[in-house]
Each structure stands twice: as structure tokens, then as C-alpha cells.
Image 1: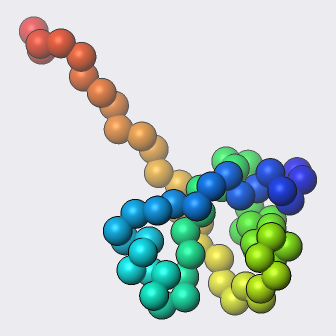
Image 2 (image 1 turned 120 degrees about the vertical axis):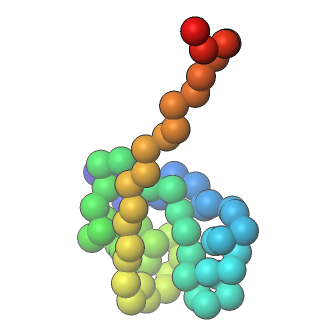
Length: 69
């Protein structure tokens, strides 16, 4: 996988804003990317030294439409 395809977009939420104050940044990444690829992509894109990478996979919530019978 090309390193430029690993980072999809930054996540801008209240929680990620609080984490930024501590020097941690949150990104949505490609589903097939692993920690090594994420570290290399961030170092390439932002010219920084990455100390640690945390990855969390979350599933979307199901939506209900119409009245429940």
C-alpha cells in the first residue's frame, strides 16, 4: 500500500482536540493499514518522529427506519 493512501483524514472531535493538547493526534486510516504503515505515513507527511501508534477498529451503529412492529 502506498504510504500516501494510509491516512484518510484527521478526526476533529472534542476528544481529539483535548488529546492534541497532550501532543496526540487522531486520524482516520485505511482499513487495511497496520501500525507500521501508519507510523511511516505520519512521519513522511508531517516530518516528525512518531513515538507510539494506537489503532482502534470501531463498527458503525445500525439505523432503524420506520415504526417497530
